[in-house]
Amino acid sequence: MEVADVLEWHGVSTPLRRPVMVMALTGWFDIAGVATSALRFLTEANDAELIATIDPDPFYDFTQVRPEARFDDDGEREIVWPTNDVVAIRFPNAVRDVVILNGVEPHTAWRTYVQSVIACYLRLGCEAMVTVGAALDAVPHTRAPIVVGSSFDPDLARGLGLSKPSYQGMTGVVGVLQTECEKEDLPAVSLRVGVPYYLDYSQHPQSAAALLQHLGHVLGVPTGVADLNEEIERWRGLHDEAMRSDPDLAGRVRALEIGYDQMTEAAIPSADDLAEQFQKFLDDQP
Image (cartoon, rainbow, N blue to C red; front, side, top):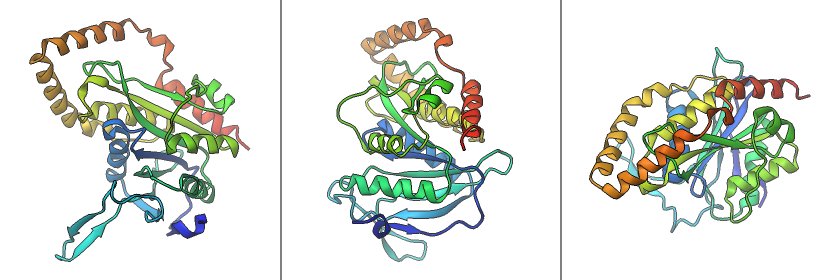
C-alpha cells in the first residue's frame, strides 16, 4: 500500500505563509480527549480550508471505532467514517498560517499513515511539526495545568529549554511520527498537558485551554481561548462538588496543591520565551 493510494489531495486555494503543522490523535496520547478537543475548538473558531483527506479504510478495525449512521439536513441517510482531514487556517495578522490534522489513531498500517502525514507536511512546505497530547498527571484541578514539551532536535530542544525524549516502552502513532521526523531531519516538537489523574477521564477543558494558550504563544497565532471560560467554570464546579462529597479525594487534592505550589516557576520556561526562541529557530533554518 502506497501513500498515493490513501491520501486524497484537495489542493490549496492560495499559498500558505510559513506554515507549521499541528497534529492530535484520539487514543494513546489524548487522555479525556483534551488535545483533540483543543484542536477542534481552534478549527471551528476559524475559517478552515480542507486540503487533504487520509482514507480511513486501510487503517481501522471498524469493530473498535465504528462508523455512525446519521441523517443529513435533507433527511438522507449517510455513514460517517472516522476522519483524518488535513485543514489550513490562515492568520492574516500573524507571521504564519497553521496546518491541522485532528484525527483518530489508526489500528493498522502505521508506517503508511505516518508517511501520509509527512507527505502533507512536505508538500505544503511546513517549517515544523508540533504534536499535542494529554496525559494523566499528579496535578490538582484547582491549579493551572502544566504544559511540558520535548524534541529530538538538539538545537530546538536547547533553544526552547525542552528535554530530549527519554521514554522507553509502548508508544502510539505520535511517538512513531516524532521518530520518523527525527530520521528525516524535520524539526518536530511534542507538547503535552497534564490532566488530574483522579478525574476518571471526565472532561477537563482547563487542560485544553492551557494547551491552546501555550500553542498560541509558541506559534504566534490567536487561539480565542477566552471563549472556553464558561465551559471551564462549569466543569470546575462539577469537580469541586465531587471533591466536597469525598473527604478522601479532598485530602488528596490538598496534598497535590501543596506539591504544586512548592514547584519553582523558574524551572518552567515562559510561553513568551518559548515563542521567541521558536521563531528564532525557524528563522535560522535554510
